[in-house]
Image 1 (cartoon, rainbow, N blue to C red):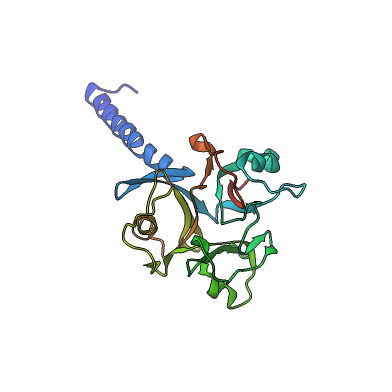
Image 2 (image 1 turned 90 degrees about the vertical axis):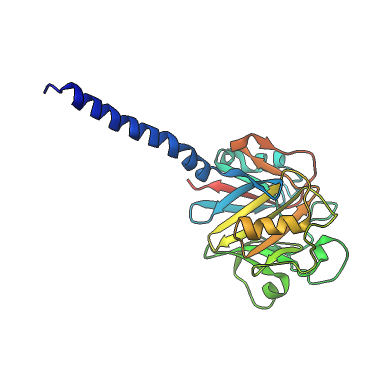
Length: 258
């Protein structure tokens, strides 16, 4: 069939519109599906890594197969073996002692290796309320204060205790000032809903107040838990990052489901 010049121009215009639309939407789709993305807030920069429990698998690790504490992402890679190719990201996941052992509740694949700690003491871990990030056997995600977690029997598959809580039922931790003088590289985890967790690490030094507001105001998390500061580390293959400047304790790894 022979087409006249006006028809060809019209077809070319339609094709051009669709091509432009594709170029416009592709970056947004890529950013949305990327394991980790950069976000700016109140003059600070954060890397946000998303865990969707409906599409991804999460695990906690603290030891190698020989029983030694992992202490870093290189050991974690050796432990994962061929599954390394499925890693979306990994991060330090809760406070630990000098040997690398968790100092609070730690549950790995349904096995409670360390019981919950409700004692008082020094340091961030004991800045009450502290809390527990956990995933149930049903796959749902939770962040509870330690007292609430301990108030009844839980069916946890994975759990790590840390502290302090950053956001509690939509409110910042009562001990935080708006933008205090303690500034560190920090990482933590917050829940958007029962299926979605945001693991966040700051790109520079931030206060507890700004870090908590980032979870509450920018990421819309009603509950968030501080994981650590200073030693905060990220392994994110998609952005070519694998921190190795600190010895770590328990680690969380999120993998694509195959």
